[in-house]
Image (cartoon, rainbow, N blue to C red; front, side, top):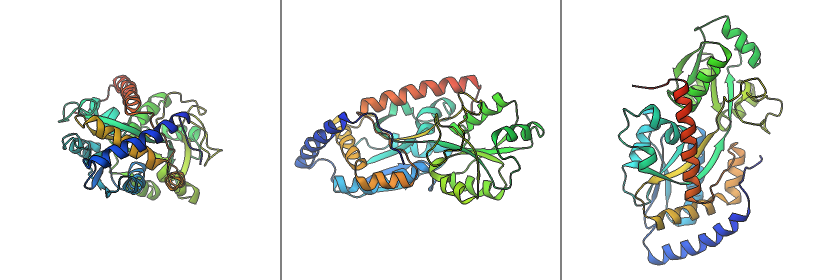
Length: 329
């Protein structure tokens, strides 16, 4: 698996920062001195959950305290995200957020949210950016994207797809419907595991799922792959075209994951967590585990770098949501 990086020179600075930060924090005995919780706002089994569990085990070794994962699901990730935003800003409750919870939901669920993700949470660092694959069950008649579009045009409104309501895959599918001139109905997903089961069984015709959860299933023949939403072809599927190659420009998003904490978390704690997480992610065993799970690692240069990335992606999604006139009351 080819890992993604943003340059190597800053890793040396991180190592130095890690040593000094750890010495200061451990010497004062202020942080950490009890277990750290990573809340995953989505169901177990998806890429976000897998990344959190690999990180938790490695981070525990670095900080010398137990680090555990809690899945707090519901409301398209808003329940878990809100719980972290409203938790004590002490560094002991982290959010493994993603593109939906921290770049999209603020605009789609503006009327329902009790917190503002951009104001009440701050990112520590990016963790991974997972490409997505358009898939169907093995018995779905079309075998490529061209055949799929022709098949859907003959059956307007009869085909369905599965996506979390208001999530990035939902918005990508709306864009695909519009560009292809087809009409498919969304059956809101209850989680990665539920979508996989429904697609394999033929209950759902079509979906966009991340490579971390479906690569082995596709290789086993239990799913068909039509295209990847990534900018380039995936090493695991060199013959699988991208959406761009298939003639659909601007459709497709990687499901990035990042660690967030409440906005009022003290800077020394934020800096400590950044250094600790970065050190944990550099562990060869972590890199191997992420590679086996088809999770491309992407780390930020600093918390400020992570903040800029999330801010810019939020601006992009705000535009996409506006163009599709999409909202949830």
